[in-house]
Amino acid sequence: MMRERKTLDRVLSRAGAMSRKQAELAIREGRVRVNGLRERDPATWVDLAQDRVSLDDRPLAEWKAVHLALHKPVGYVTTRSDEHGRATVYELLPDVEAWVAPIGRLDRDTSGLLLFTNDTELAEHVNNPASKLPKTYDCVAAGELDDQALERLRRGVPLDDGPTRPALVELFARGEGRTQLALTITEGRNRQVRRMLEALGSRVLSLQRTAIGPIRLGPLELGRHRKLSSREVRALYSR
Ligand code: URA
Image 1 (tube, helix red, strand yellow):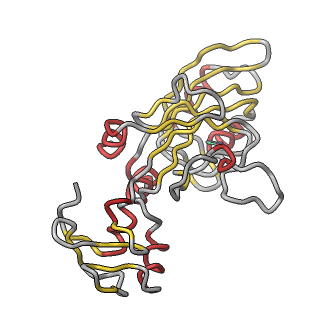
Image 2: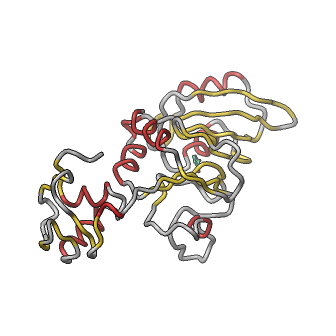
Image 3: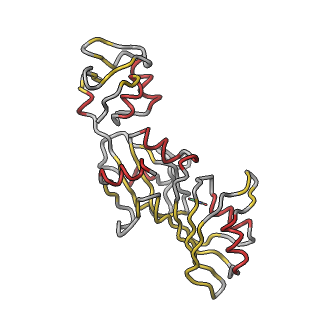
């Protein structure tokens, strides 16, 4: 898989052992060996086709990249530990032994698809705005948004950190003082969907992420997680 030469810190993070920063620290702490010799320079070039790399005396080949999809319920914060003692998404992953981190985040009041991985290169790709990976949300908004308002969402809404990129908007239902729609955006700014609707004088009543690029939430039960298939991981990379 990994044929070309890479720096040692990158090799460790790509193998799913830890983040790039953690890898750098582990190398400097002398926890990493290359061909049996302790290596303390994170910028050392290695070629996994030839070099034997170990971390804490465990061959790197034993560390596996993990990619998970979680159906996050409302009420969980996307952090490892919360200073206010609120429930965190990690409480929903008690059986996952690998070091994994969420790719991006969902607000406490948002449910839906949240990806986790220890593959920092994939996380960087998905999070990078330049990748323009579409993220789709099912949204119930307060008020009955007219076609003009939906058009404004499509064209881009001015927010205090700049106008939003054009979005895809699909109207599901409008009536009884609310609007149900699917919104697909290619950015991941803080509270973006909520702020887009607030800019129109509406507000989000409920929000669920249903897709990230080619990955669908599908029938995954609330609070449960599943592994991404290698095909799904490849598809994420190719977007
Ligand atoms: N937009 C929001 O406003 N909140 C989320 O959690 C995700 C997207």
